[in-house]
Length: 297
Image 1 (cartoon, rainbow, N blue to C red):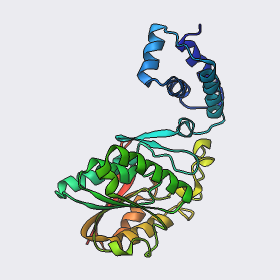
Image 2: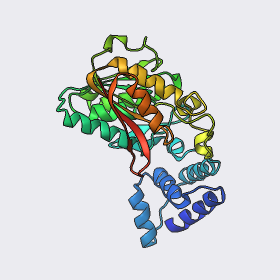
Image 3: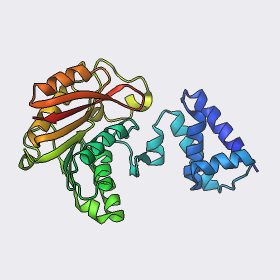
Image 4: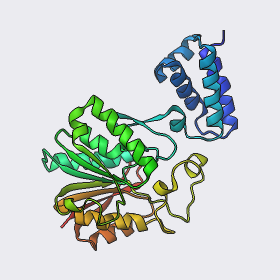
């Protein structure tokens, strides 16, 4: 019988030849998914030279998943879910895959809520995507009420699926999470909330049209609507989000918005011109300027 290490070596060779940056890691995750195990179980099995008995159906499924990954389909689409902070979110074609750097955006928002001693914060998540940001807020801040907006019907369906999963585990959080399909930049979206929101937190489309991503996983699979910022420099939609946030926020409310590393200075200046008394760019975990933090005058 083939050892787990042999399976991983063979799969990693296929993925490496396809240009995958992390072939061994991806192979381990795919095997863990098929076998219903954890990643640490695969590592332990490889170390101890263990053999796992996979039935024919499991072996066929594993080979099919490896073939899909070799064609540069995102790993998260293949396994059907993606981790984000304390959540495991359902994802697939039509929805943007949540990134680790966006976790720093959420953390900045939660830190501000704590510093302000807000016990029942009113939060809006514009461009909700999979629901990663808003669902993190509503599950991690007890008493928070979140309104989330998503325009894409495909992404909206994934958000609703994740909202339902959260509701089953945490009915109170599910009750306090309100999902609306609409244009996050439009003044006609959530107009009843204007001037009442404590925090707008968002990861809008911001990739410059002049900088098409090189990675096939991003370029060919992430939805264009979730990627591109509507102009050559990618700042058009983020600027529209700043304007919408200025209307939604109460005086003293905060905007936390992810952006491209090239857009920091421009968006800080734009925010200051849109009734934000304070505005600055903060770094992600890699030390790159990643998000705008601005406080409404």
